[in-house]
Amino acid sequence: MKLLSGIRPRTLILSVTPVLIGGAAAISDIESRFRESRACPGPGCHVGHGFWLPYVPPTFLLVWLLCLLVALFLQIAANLANDYSDGVRGTDRARTDSSATSSGTSPAAPTRLVSSGTDPSSVLVAAIVFAALACEAGLVLTFATSHWWFLIVGILCLLAGWFYVGGKHPYGYRGLGDLAVFLFFGLVATLGTQYALTSRITAMGICGAISAGLSACAVLGVNNLRDADTDRQAGKNTLVVLLGRQAGSIIVAAEALLAAVLLGVTTVLQSSATGICATLLALSSAALLVSDTMLPHDERDYRLMFRHATFLSLVLAVGYFLCTLEF
Image (cartoon, rainbow, N blue to C red; front, side, top):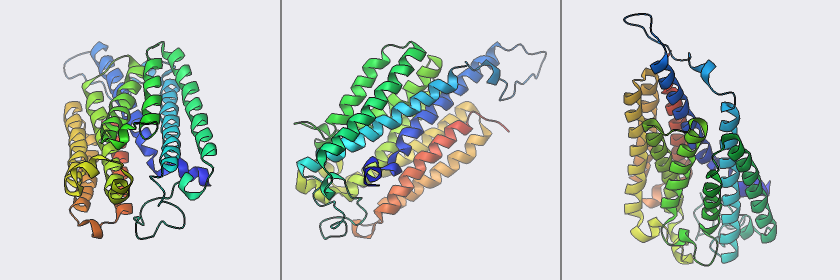
């Protein structure tokens, strides 16, 4: 059960969302090409959604699943590696089972394995195991798609996960964590999935990648707002620590709103009636997070803010998929 808390299952939606969005963009691209190539019998001919299904490559679902496994295993490995690195460095020394509600720590802050007494070497081994699983799934994905440069992307992902808070000069301690999250949980995961499935990148894929990256940054921003005081004491200069809570709150609100707006842009580009409902729900979810950031720090429920941020990520994943459907 302790290992499960180190995996941080509530955050894994951040890996699922970009892969689902990338798959939705790939499906939309396949459908678009099928519509263009299908001969219409006469004026007013309309090829309905779903007719593209027989033309999906037989390996489509397998490749999509492999993309999901790579993303999940990489995030789990990164979560465990972060627990290890922050624990041995002392950054998480206040986040133990016994001090979760003490005066120096937000009661919303989850406990960490190493700081709670778990052997650091066992946490590091667990991180290595999940990194190895990610490598195995990535190798199969590379062979299945014949995109050999995926190996380079995979190596960069592993390095980014480790040096986020690991090593002598972790970039997460220098305000660059948000940029890394946007790149890897947004652009790389989403566009990588679409390219693995269709060998193409489309406007829908780009909009979805930015949405996924921004929503992931919003989740990170909520956590950094919560931990600003302890991060500052530990010398962990996150973007919130560098800019202050007010500026950090504005950034989180802007990220949430822009992520939802981009879903609306995609809905218009796709002329999707079903996407309208998802866009309205995404805007409502973003509005909840915006209202959270308007409260004073002492009055915020960071657990609720985290749920609002992760729910937005889920809504975006469903919303981009709905843009490919028509009922």
